[in-house]
Length: 283
Ligand code: SF4
Ligand code: SF4
Image (cartoon, rainbow, N blue to C red):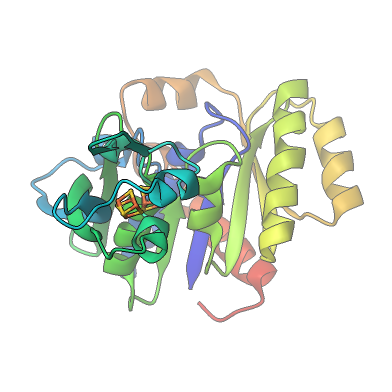
């Protein structure tokens, strides 16, 4: 079973929910937690430990000057501005390349070949006996977040229970994370901004075609608008985490409430039961 944990905006506590859920479940079963927030991965802060790095490469073009006639076809085709054809040479800007392979196909001289370029890495660790952490890390200045997410998901394949922590927002990296998931947990907070972004995130889950449920985090008890929205859209509320100084204190020191506060391991185990019920698949 693959569970994606997402949110329409940053700062809702999405990664905290993912980490707490992973810790609670890893007490009794094998869990793979995948950090798909590759521009700012942070799950390793909850689960420190030695990791093995696997580089992630993507293909970028290399021009053969002996064959190139500077016809300009490749430059016209590339809509990312990664190629500039001058009178006597072709400039390649690898940072802008999205590895679509189009320039190889359109070149009439067969002057373009693809060479691998490292854009990030995937770090694998085993912080707990039954928890594997796989973190995608995009190199600074790179644009190919989906490639690193794909690589991280491939490494997690074949395991019975996988949690994907998506990046915040609703852009391509989130879609890449949600693809192939059985169910999505949308983490929100009870503010007008939170509700606005929950609407967007719910639409993305709907378009990808996976069932979704909602976790309300840092609830101050004023959840009526969020509850009404969820009811109207048929989104079950899977869990409500209240705002409390005790919880904030644990989280501020990088702790996990499922591990450090009594009763919360059970609450996160119950959350998993709710997710499974919502997904309609066997865990
Ligand atoms: S399409 Fe091929 S031949 Fe034309 S400029 Fe590009 S690399 Fe050179
Ligand atoms: S592979 Fe695609 S994105 Fe990259 S340079 Fe060629 S056409 Fe542009």
